Length: 192
Image (cartoon, helix red, strand yellow):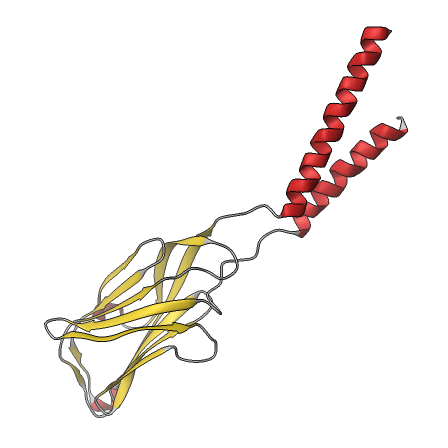
């Protein structure tokens, strides 16, 4: 094997190594600016805000009764918390809309939302688009000692893989060497 062939093989191997070393990370919400809306059926909208996702920390809260309602967004999940305190009734169906989910590190789209804990019988609907999640909850009454209800959800995403510049450069270099050596080999065959 001559020196130029070894150089071309070395370039291809180095390019392959770069492709592995620069694989994109999982889609993440930490640091993303997201929007939340809260509405009560027949009453109106009580919350429509944007905030930056931090963990730990609750991004959205709304006073209700003696305590409040919260939406806590995490890296790839979120919790809805109804802490009713001495108020033991949610007197209307309610809807939470979490939108503008841009994913800070790797572009992606939402492919699923799964309830991981909480009373599923109080959820009347879970829907999503590429960047928005809607959770619909039924009105309910609880005994005062059970006035805190928490629902936890996982967000499944499909990530768009974007090649790193060094991966593209390495691949183009390898293709260039391959074309150069093929022409050189063809010239040798034609002369010889």
